[in-house]
Amino acid sequence: MSPQLIWTSFSTIFRREVRRFTRIWPQTLVPPVITMSLYFVIFGSLIGSRIGEMGGYSYMEFVVPGLIMMSVITNSYANVVSSFYSAKFQRSVEELLVSPTPNWVVMAGYVLGGVARGLIVGLIVTIIALLFTSLEVQHIGVTILIVFLTSVLFSLAGFINAIYANSFDDISIIPTFVLTPLTYLGGVFYSIELLSPFWQGLSKLNPILYMVNAFRYGVLGVSDINVAWAFAGVLVFIGLLSGWSLYLMRHGKRLRH
Image 1: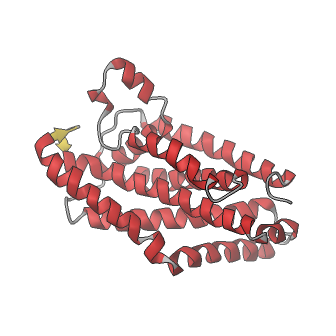
Image 2: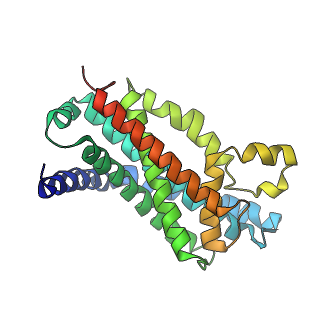
């Protein structure tokens, strides 16, 4: 395919993904904002006022970057897994696979659609957070880059989950039993300095801990981990999941009936 046709294919898939979640915005954009607002009220204002400072900041300031990142992760993932599995369920994905469109273009269109939803929800949650506290971003480059790379990573994870899923029930297994526990134990609500050395070591095996702390470093300038490790880990996982996705598409595993 010529570069112009590749761009046309990519932009068509991407625009369709954005139209899909913006058309049903009461189901895709409003619920996470309501959920995060409740977190801000309960953990930030009510419970946080009794906790005091954490990492040199009020608990509300400390928890906001984690909650923003949590909304980006869950929405990037949810958008791609639901959209691509729906296309697979309706057999429309087979039309994409037999078309001249390269597999990487199909994958990029769906992934960037998930990134768009994750970033839009993250931006709305940030605006809501400013009603509760003030935020002064310390490292704007780190903040933008880590939130973008994280949304790419979890969009790819949602893409792979959708390929393997055999039913709509299957697309909720990973978010329920893997993603949610890792996110809640990923330093969103606390600093791992509060944990014993054993649990600190165990927590460092959780990849979401690095992403949350890198984003917190970008916003507040504090982190429990080396931020360079966070970027290295995210880039490695993006490379691995991209290769895995393209392998599954090339062999038509779980896609062709």
